[in-house]
Amino acid sequence: MNDGYTRALLRLSVFSLSLSIFSPASAQDLPQPWESISDERLAVPEPGDWVNYRRTYDVAGFSPLVEINRDNVDELRMVWSWAVEDGNRWVPTPIVANGLMYVSEGMGRVTAFNAATGDIVWQHTRRYPQDIGVSQAYNKHRGVSIYGDNIYWGTADSYLVALDARTGEQVWEVQTADYTVDGGHSHPPLIVDGKVLLGRTGGDLGTQGFFLALDADSGEELWRFNTVPVNEGDPAWNTWSRSDSPPLGGTPWNTASYDAELGLVYFGTGQPYPWSALLRGPGDALYTNSILAVDINTGERRWHYQVMPNDSWDRAAFESLLVDVEINGEMRKALIQTSKIGWGVMLDRETGEFLHAFETAYDNLVTGFESNGRPILNPELVPTPADMDSGKVFEVCPFYHGGRDLNTASWDAATGTYYIGMNNSCMDVSFFSQDYDRGTFYTGMSGRAKPAPGYDHVGEFVAFDPVTGEKLWTYQDDKGSAMTASALATAGGVVFGGTAEREFFALNSDTGERLWRARLNGDISGAPISFEVDGKQYIAVGAGGRIAQAFTYRRLSDTELSPGGGVMWVFALADYGKAKTLLSICLRGQLRVWLYGLFGCQC
Image (cartoon, rainbow, N blue to C red; front, side, top):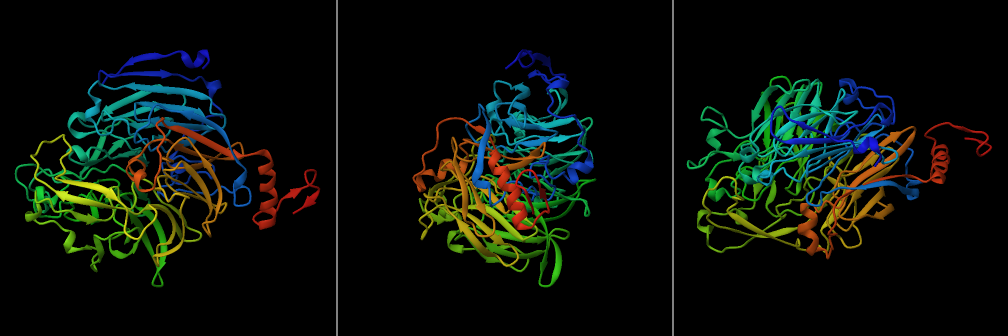
């Protein structure tokens, strides 16, 4: 690192006693002239951009770039890599804008790289308090967001921090809660029309969930939605019955999506606290395990759908992928929710109406759905008060990491195909009494992972038609190991994914045929992205995060996890691969190009 990088500044925060260290950049360090990221660019990214967590507000996770395609993806080569300090629950999604890639780490660091070369442009490190380990967000960071000239970073000590995207210098910070009680932030915010929309984590330790909108210029809180009731006047209060502890959990700890036409933000929530309904008492425990649609301007709830009422098995909801599809001859503004249950659910995203469900992974707990979308449970697997401390063991499928976890889907609107990595597993569950002690792992249940009956594998990468529920094709690695990476489909006819067995793969998006793979340093723990710099397409992915499903499912598929830390990898075509690209584009009729002087032909 040269002298420009080693100069560090210590700045005392005006809001806390934590210290920040940053290595600043100068104007000449920037790989491209800087352009502020506008509302319009976030809403409609340029083809080579990856400026949102899943690129677009509908969280489709799809790239329109075509330089890397079925005909040349086997020519992918590593361009650069960078090792991070995180090696436990690191689930990174980098973002790329103006030739810079931004990567966050759970230990409290954000790094800006020259996205094409891997050169460090700046680093900013936050010095967390000594007791930061009480925050469930610590050491689990997943990414940052960009807007205007700022990077927005939710921290484990429960601050929203704005950094100058060009230099890494802190612009401001605001405290959102007390991290010792209410957890912190591990997921990047969604930024819409000058509003920073931010969830939080900590539901496993008794955080009282809420979702925030803050002003992007100042950090001022604009509205707050409580995902569990805080007083008896709340309409959700009567869905909780225990009197010796308040409603807790339901943290909105993952990806939000947004429909500009409807003015609605959609986010999912986690499980109630405690996990076991035998400790909570009867009741659906709203709004845990739910999809919530709230007004972008007021934070008022428009509708909700609960994936798992009265949960005892940690069946959290995840992101809602927004799609416009034809169902029964009618175009519907819909959303697709795949969560920890082994089912995908389609809802009308304007009203919350249940449209239908389709099976995604082995599930013996949910046997179907009522007409209003409420799941129908196998009564033999629902515990009763007599089962508490009885030693009775229930075989429940899937395990509490779910049919899927944070590994998100990708949607190709042109073909109507939904791609995602699923895992098949079960658990032996027993229920026990436990004294209430907020801030501890208060579950009232234990579950040990085991194989799903009839399966010789755990992981499947699947292409679904979500309207019919049909599995179009499936892919497994050689060991049948767990699927750990998010999916990335591209207009080049390729879809990327990754496994706990260190395999980063590229498949033909129509057939599932494997076209390329690389063995990286560890489990493919992040979400792959694609971006373009100076006309060249790149693929980036994080690996070695030792994430939950990789760690738990390793013994079910004889998978060895690397003991090292995480690494960010960046790939591109070799030069001769680019020549193949031009030929393949001609042959596939996607573009009329003239290649005089290079090949002496007209295509």
